[in-house]
Image (tube, rainbow, N blue to C red; front, side, top):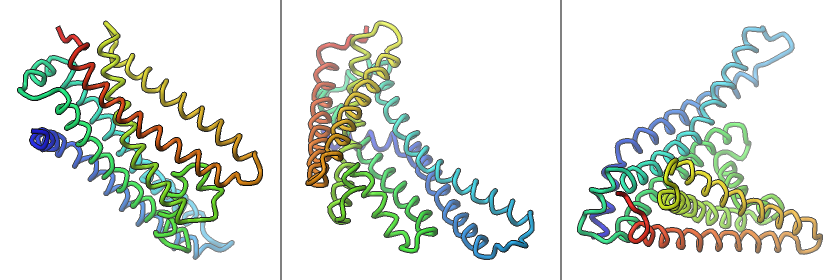
Length: 272
Protein backbone atom coordinates (compact mmCIF):
# COMPACT_ATOMS: atom_id res chain seq x y z
CA UNK A 1 0.00 0.00 0.00
CA UNK A 2 2.86 2.38 0.77
CA UNK A 3 4.12 1.91 -2.79
CA UNK A 4 0.73 2.82 -4.26
CA UNK A 5 0.45 5.89 -2.07
CA UNK A 6 3.97 6.95 -3.02
CA UNK A 7 3.21 6.49 -6.74
CA UNK A 8 0.02 8.55 -6.39
CA UNK A 9 1.89 11.31 -4.59
CA UNK A 10 4.58 11.39 -7.27
CA UNK A 11 1.97 11.63 -10.02
CA UNK A 12 0.31 14.54 -8.21
CA UNK A 13 3.64 16.35 -7.82
CA UNK A 14 5.12 15.44 -11.21
CA UNK A 15 3.78 18.34 -13.29
CA UNK A 16 4.49 21.27 -10.92
CA UNK A 17 7.82 19.75 -9.90
CA UNK A 18 8.73 19.23 -13.55
CA UNK A 19 7.95 22.88 -14.32
CA UNK A 20 10.08 24.16 -11.43
CA UNK A 21 12.97 21.83 -12.21
CA UNK A 22 12.71 22.85 -15.87
CA UNK A 23 12.94 26.53 -14.91
CA UNK A 24 15.98 25.74 -12.78
CA UNK A 25 17.61 23.86 -15.65
CA UNK A 26 16.90 26.63 -18.17
CA UNK A 27 18.21 29.32 -15.81
CA UNK A 28 21.31 27.24 -15.11
CA UNK A 29 22.06 26.73 -18.79
CA UNK A 30 21.63 30.46 -19.47
CA UNK A 31 23.91 31.16 -16.52
CA UNK A 32 26.63 28.82 -17.78
CA UNK A 33 26.49 30.33 -21.27
CA UNK A 34 26.45 33.84 -19.82
CA UNK A 35 29.44 33.24 -17.55
CA UNK A 36 31.30 31.71 -20.50
CA UNK A 37 30.61 34.78 -22.65
CA UNK A 38 31.53 37.12 -19.79
CA UNK A 39 34.80 35.25 -19.28
CA UNK A 40 35.62 35.53 -22.99
CA UNK A 41 34.78 39.24 -22.99
CA UNK A 42 36.92 39.91 -19.92
CA UNK A 43 39.96 38.39 -21.66
CA UNK A 44 39.66 40.99 -24.41
CA UNK A 45 39.39 44.05 -22.17
CA UNK A 46 42.09 46.72 -22.43
CA UNK A 47 42.43 50.25 -21.17
CA UNK A 48 41.03 51.41 -24.51
CA UNK A 49 37.94 49.19 -24.35
CA UNK A 50 34.78 51.08 -25.27
CA UNK A 51 32.23 51.99 -22.59
CA UNK A 52 29.70 49.96 -24.60
CA UNK A 53 31.78 46.81 -24.21
CA UNK A 54 32.29 47.48 -20.50
CA UNK A 55 28.60 48.12 -19.90
CA UNK A 56 27.72 45.03 -21.91
CA UNK A 57 29.99 42.95 -19.72
CA UNK A 58 28.42 44.33 -16.54
CA UNK A 59 24.90 43.67 -17.81
CA UNK A 60 25.82 40.16 -18.91
CA UNK A 61 27.37 39.39 -15.54
CA UNK A 62 24.27 40.71 -13.71
CA UNK A 63 21.93 38.59 -15.82
CA UNK A 64 23.95 35.45 -15.29
CA UNK A 65 24.21 36.12 -11.55
CA UNK A 66 20.42 36.49 -11.48
CA UNK A 67 20.12 33.13 -13.24
CA UNK A 68 22.21 31.63 -10.46
CA UNK A 69 19.76 33.07 -7.95
CA UNK A 70 16.81 31.64 -9.90
CA UNK A 71 18.34 28.14 -9.66
CA UNK A 72 18.33 28.19 -5.85
CA UNK A 73 15.00 30.05 -5.75
CA UNK A 74 13.48 27.25 -7.84
CA UNK A 75 14.55 24.69 -5.25
CA UNK A 76 13.07 26.81 -2.45
CA UNK A 77 9.83 27.29 -4.42
CA UNK A 78 9.55 23.54 -4.90
CA UNK A 79 10.01 23.00 -1.16
CA UNK A 80 7.30 25.55 -0.32
CA UNK A 81 4.92 24.01 -2.86
CA UNK A 82 5.41 20.50 -1.49
CA UNK A 83 4.95 21.64 2.10
CA UNK A 84 1.79 23.63 1.30
CA UNK A 85 0.39 20.68 -0.64
CA UNK A 86 0.92 18.54 2.46
CA UNK A 87 -1.07 21.07 4.47
CA UNK A 88 -3.84 21.32 1.87
CA UNK A 89 -4.29 17.56 1.50
CA UNK A 90 -4.14 16.86 5.25
CA UNK A 91 -5.64 19.80 7.16
CA UNK A 92 -8.15 21.53 4.90
CA UNK A 93 -11.44 20.31 3.43
CA UNK A 94 -9.41 18.06 1.14
CA UNK A 95 -8.02 16.46 4.29
CA UNK A 96 -11.43 14.94 5.02
CA UNK A 97 -11.17 12.96 1.79
CA UNK A 98 -7.54 12.06 2.34
CA UNK A 99 -8.10 10.70 5.83
CA UNK A 100 -11.11 8.60 4.76
CA UNK A 101 -8.91 6.43 2.58
CA UNK A 102 -8.70 2.81 3.83
CA UNK A 103 -5.01 3.14 4.69
CA UNK A 104 -3.11 3.95 7.86
CA UNK A 105 -2.19 7.52 8.72
CA UNK A 106 1.43 6.45 9.07
CA UNK A 107 1.47 5.18 5.47
CA UNK A 108 -0.04 8.46 4.22
CA UNK A 109 2.57 10.56 6.01
CA UNK A 110 5.42 8.25 4.99
CA UNK A 111 4.40 8.33 1.31
CA UNK A 112 4.24 12.11 1.31
CA UNK A 113 7.60 12.35 3.07
CA UNK A 114 9.33 9.93 0.67
CA UNK A 115 7.97 11.76 -2.39
CA UNK A 116 9.01 15.12 -0.98
CA UNK A 117 12.45 13.80 -0.03
CA UNK A 118 13.05 12.34 -3.49
CA UNK A 119 12.03 15.50 -5.34
CA UNK A 120 13.98 17.80 -3.03
CA UNK A 121 17.08 15.62 -3.40
CA UNK A 122 16.77 15.85 -7.19
CA UNK A 123 16.36 19.64 -6.92
CA UNK A 124 19.39 19.97 -4.63
CA UNK A 125 21.61 17.83 -6.88
CA UNK A 126 20.46 19.75 -9.96
CA UNK A 127 21.17 23.08 -8.25
CA UNK A 128 24.65 21.92 -7.23
CA UNK A 129 25.40 20.65 -10.74
CA UNK A 130 24.24 23.88 -12.39
CA UNK A 131 26.11 26.13 -9.98
CA UNK A 132 29.21 23.98 -10.41
CA UNK A 133 28.89 24.49 -14.15
CA UNK A 134 28.68 28.24 -13.72
CA UNK A 135 31.52 28.48 -11.20
CA UNK A 136 33.59 26.05 -13.26
CA UNK A 137 33.80 28.64 -16.02
CA UNK A 138 35.57 31.02 -13.64
CA UNK A 139 37.59 28.34 -11.82
CA UNK A 140 40.69 26.91 -13.48
CA UNK A 141 39.85 23.54 -11.93
CA UNK A 142 36.56 23.34 -13.85
CA UNK A 143 33.17 22.03 -12.73
CA UNK A 144 34.62 19.19 -10.68
CA UNK A 145 36.62 21.59 -8.50
CA UNK A 146 33.53 23.78 -8.08
CA UNK A 147 31.45 20.76 -7.06
CA UNK A 148 34.10 19.78 -4.52
CA UNK A 149 34.06 23.29 -3.10
CA UNK A 150 30.25 23.44 -2.79
CA UNK A 151 29.99 20.03 -1.13
CA UNK A 152 32.86 20.86 1.21
CA UNK A 153 31.11 24.05 2.30
CA UNK A 154 28.02 22.01 3.09
CA UNK A 155 30.01 20.29 5.83
CA UNK A 156 30.16 23.60 7.68
CA UNK A 157 33.22 24.93 9.47
CA UNK A 158 34.92 21.56 9.09
CA UNK A 159 34.96 21.97 5.30
CA UNK A 160 36.61 25.38 5.60
CA UNK A 161 39.36 24.26 7.97
CA UNK A 162 39.99 20.67 6.88
CA UNK A 163 42.83 19.82 4.49
CA UNK A 164 41.14 16.59 3.40
CA UNK A 165 38.89 17.14 0.38
CA UNK A 166 37.58 13.57 0.52
CA UNK A 167 36.45 13.90 4.14
CA UNK A 168 34.93 17.33 3.53
CA UNK A 169 33.03 16.22 0.44
CA UNK A 170 31.79 13.02 2.10
CA UNK A 171 30.62 14.85 5.21
CA UNK A 172 29.09 17.65 3.16
CA UNK A 173 27.16 15.18 1.00
CA UNK A 174 25.89 13.36 4.08
CA UNK A 175 24.90 16.66 5.70
CA UNK A 176 22.99 17.66 2.56
CA UNK A 177 21.07 14.38 2.33
CA UNK A 178 20.20 14.37 6.02
CA UNK A 179 19.41 18.09 5.95
CA UNK A 180 16.82 17.58 3.23
CA UNK A 181 15.03 14.95 5.29
CA UNK A 182 15.30 17.10 8.41
CA UNK A 183 13.76 20.17 6.75
CA UNK A 184 10.92 18.22 5.12
CA UNK A 185 10.09 16.33 8.32
CA UNK A 186 10.33 19.50 10.42
CA UNK A 187 8.02 21.35 8.02
CA UNK A 188 5.45 18.53 8.04
CA UNK A 189 5.63 18.26 11.83
CA UNK A 190 5.36 22.04 12.29
CA UNK A 191 2.25 22.19 10.11
CA UNK A 192 0.73 19.34 12.10
CA UNK A 193 1.49 21.06 15.42
CA UNK A 194 0.03 24.29 14.06
CA UNK A 195 -3.14 22.48 12.96
CA UNK A 196 -3.44 20.95 16.43
CA UNK A 197 -2.59 23.96 18.61
CA UNK A 198 -3.88 26.98 16.73
CA UNK A 199 -7.56 27.74 16.29
CA UNK A 200 -6.77 30.48 13.78
CA UNK A 201 -3.72 31.30 11.65
CA UNK A 202 -2.56 27.68 11.67
CA UNK A 203 0.02 28.22 8.93
CA UNK A 204 1.49 31.23 10.74
CA UNK A 205 1.79 29.14 13.90
CA UNK A 206 3.48 26.38 11.91
CA UNK A 207 5.96 28.85 10.40
CA UNK A 208 6.77 30.07 13.90
CA UNK A 209 7.47 26.53 15.11
CA UNK A 210 9.59 25.72 12.06
CA UNK A 211 11.64 28.92 12.19
CA UNK A 212 12.02 28.75 15.96
CA UNK A 213 13.36 25.19 16.02
CA UNK A 214 15.59 25.73 12.98
CA UNK A 215 17.02 28.97 14.37
CA UNK A 216 17.63 27.54 17.82
CA UNK A 217 19.47 24.46 16.58
CA UNK A 218 21.52 26.47 14.07
CA UNK A 219 22.46 28.96 16.78
CA UNK A 220 23.53 26.23 19.21
CA UNK A 221 25.74 24.45 16.71
CA UNK A 222 27.17 27.74 15.39
CA UNK A 223 28.22 28.70 18.90
CA UNK A 224 29.70 25.25 19.52
CA UNK A 225 31.61 25.39 16.21
CA UNK A 226 33.07 28.80 17.04
CA UNK A 227 34.14 27.63 20.50
CA UNK A 228 35.77 24.52 19.04
CA UNK A 229 37.45 26.48 16.22
CA UNK A 230 39.07 28.75 18.81
CA UNK A 231 40.27 25.76 20.78
CA UNK A 232 43.62 25.46 19.02
CA UNK A 233 45.17 22.00 18.60
CA UNK A 234 42.87 19.30 17.34
CA UNK A 235 40.22 21.84 16.32
CA UNK A 236 39.75 20.37 12.83
CA UNK A 237 39.00 16.91 14.16
CA UNK A 238 36.70 18.36 16.80
CA UNK A 239 34.84 20.39 14.16
CA UNK A 240 34.34 17.20 12.20
CA UNK A 241 32.89 15.58 15.31
CA UNK A 242 30.55 18.54 15.81
CA UNK A 243 29.32 18.25 12.21
CA UNK A 244 28.78 14.50 12.59
CA UNK A 245 26.90 15.08 15.85
CA UNK A 246 24.74 17.73 14.19
CA UNK A 247 24.00 15.42 11.28
CA UNK A 248 23.03 12.55 13.58
CA UNK A 249 20.82 14.85 15.64
CA UNK A 250 19.10 16.15 12.50
CA UNK A 251 18.50 12.58 11.33
CA UNK A 252 16.98 11.68 14.71
CA UNK A 253 14.79 14.80 14.62
CA UNK A 254 13.61 13.92 11.10
CA UNK A 255 12.56 10.42 12.17
CA UNK A 256 10.99 11.75 15.35
CA UNK A 257 8.96 14.42 13.57
CA UNK A 258 7.65 11.99 10.96
CA UNK A 259 6.52 9.61 13.71
CA UNK A 260 5.05 12.55 15.65
CA UNK A 261 3.21 13.77 12.56
CA UNK A 262 1.59 10.39 12.00
CA UNK A 263 0.58 10.15 15.66
CA UNK A 264 -0.87 13.66 15.90
CA UNK A 265 -2.83 13.38 12.65
CA UNK A 266 -4.30 10.10 13.86
CA UNK A 267 -5.16 11.08 17.43
CA UNK A 268 -5.01 14.83 18.02
CA UNK A 269 -5.84 16.90 14.95
CA UNK A 270 -9.54 17.70 14.68
CA UNK A 271 -10.70 18.67 11.21
CA UNK A 272 -14.30 19.27 12.23
